[in-house]
Length: 359
Length: 177
Image 1 (cartoon, rainbow over the protein chains, first blue to last red):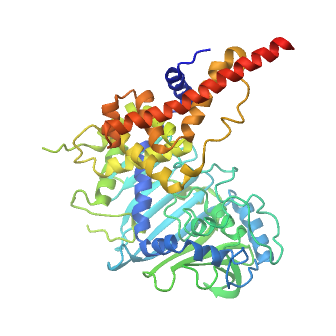
Image 2: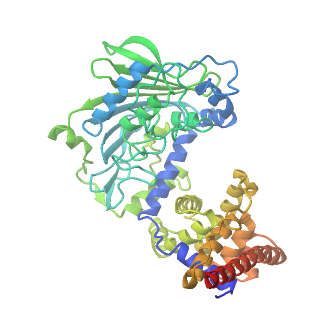
Image 3: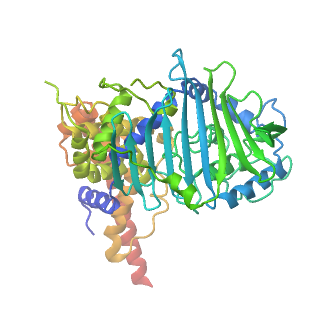
């Protein structure tokens, strides 16, 4: 037997990595990650608090856990949870989730407060996100078709790009497959008083912060391009994992709604209103907790039938007169602008970053 | 004068070198997923300074990968996880496939080594850098590279010796039966 360890090690490394290929479109994926980080900065106070207070979050979300302190016993709203869960299961991918998202907050602690909006649509593998500046101008319009053709339109630069094979970023689950954080037994009715432990994503220690700040959770998801799952799947995760509990009934937009909310005193407060007639979420509001930099994100959700007219909303239109350029050009400019490495004539951040866009 | 590089240039560079860098990242991180994450983080750092980047991007990425892997390793506390299964749970080597099994076992052991030792071995035997080049990438003295590499290889040799002893023993048992 060959005992030349150095050669064997080299050959072993070769074998171990032999079939590895870098994913296509790495600059785009990296830019998307970068974008997510920039957006996260708008929530710097929240994130910092979460990071430093992870134990507190666990105690709040998993009060029944050993050493949970003085928190009240956790009682999941079993009936509502099971009904919403079933409705969401049926809604996705059968219906199109349409989100109108309003963000109010400062890009950085101490910075001026800005309000920005975005519209997003999610349907199976297809998604589209349009972000608007505080002045209401469209900034970016991006999306992916079911055949993983990614289109990005940059309004400030009046350019657009399209590339195949860039459907969803890394770590994104495909429809029908479980996503990280999804409750495998999400169709079960949870008994009163049951603690939600065990399934991936529901573990104490990382479950709370990750779920409340999970990309894709309507109201706090960064963008339709970033969410690993559709809006329905993300919501189902939060509900199934017991992050939210029932808080009564209210009227929202003239309709009666069941209110599901995170526990009082959470570092991040999240409330979801569910329409009783359909058991589908109709609004999500996320607020920073007491003592944190003010931040509020409101997502109004409509569930659309996949008619031809509604499916057309998932297509990114190319405005007349816009110039087609290589994706790298739009992307490079976007990233560099966002980073402030260069001061172009138009300086924008994605709308949901809560930053202003100067035209 | 600093370079003024375009995003397209970065894309071209990655198209050529990303596969190899990903393999390095995987060896440093221990899994495909962790390797991809490591590489993306490194590329993100490069992207931040790409416009004015003046140097060898591959060297920069390699250095960043090693630093990130070392930091992540320290932070995660995995250094506490001692070498396992390889010594006690090794399957007995089988004839002609023995070398193949040993290669896999060596890689598994590599992934269990402390980050610095692992980085040294990856840079020396995968990237085929010299001790001096490895020291430059890791930002340490050449002597440190030599000692870390030597310790890592010593572990590998111990494993290979045990492996060969087991192979010999299995051969004897095979003859008796």
